[in-house]
Structure formats: C-alpha cells, structure tokens
Length: 135
Ligand SMILES: [Zn+2]
Image 1 (cartoon, rainbow, N blue to C red):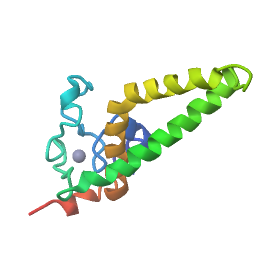
Image 2 (cartoon, helix red, strand yellow):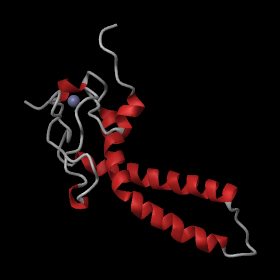
Image 3 (cartoon, rainbow, N blue to C red):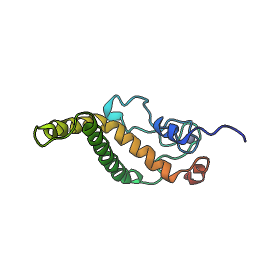
Image 4 (cartoon, rainbow, N blue to C red):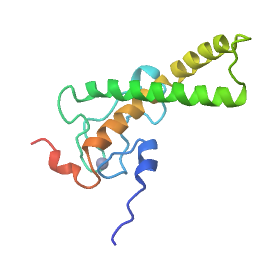
C-alpha cells in the first residue's frame, strides 16, 4: 500500500521528475521566456534525482522530438482529412502544409520539453532512480 503513486502519464505531461513524480523537471513552469525553455535544475529539487544522467544525455532527445513531429503531422493530416478533406481539385494540400508547419513551430518549445521528459522516463523508473545519483 503506502503512498499513492502519481499517475505516470499525468506526471509526464506535468513534466515532473520520473523518480519521485513530485519535483519539477524544468526551472520555469511556463515556456516563457523562450530562451530559458530548456533550463533545468541539475538535480530534482525534491528527491535529488540527477536529470542529465551523463554528459550529452540529451542528444538522444533529437530522435524523440523528430518522432513526435512525425506523429503530430500524421494526427493533423487525419484531422484535416476528416474535418476539411483533401482533394486534388482544390488547393487544400497547399492550405494544409503551412498550417502544419506553423503549428509545429508554435509547438516546438513544448515538443522539446516533452521529448526530454519522455527520454528521462525511459531511463529512470519510479522510485529506482536515486541509485543512478552521481557520487
Ligand atoms: Zn524527484
């Protein structure tokens, strides 16, 4: 029994530490100012879990954000097809493209953050992460 474990998916979208699901992974709750969007404390303020587990740890997140972009384009394309519909007779595809590109640019700060969250959740399991602490 013990304490209730916070829901994993919910904690991910709230960008909480994967080890304790209480501490915030990012310094600023808001994505603004944009240049500090990826500012993170070195360790979790609650459980002291190290966030950047090793030097260059975040390089792998490039693949995660790429996959998220592809998935989003797919979702937008399905929604667009259902709501507006694609046709070769008009230029719906030329309307769709800039909308998707615009949305992806707008969502970029969120995608960058969430890809770090997803990536860290792969490597750090709830309540087990502290063993990875340095020193
Ligand atoms: Zn923590």
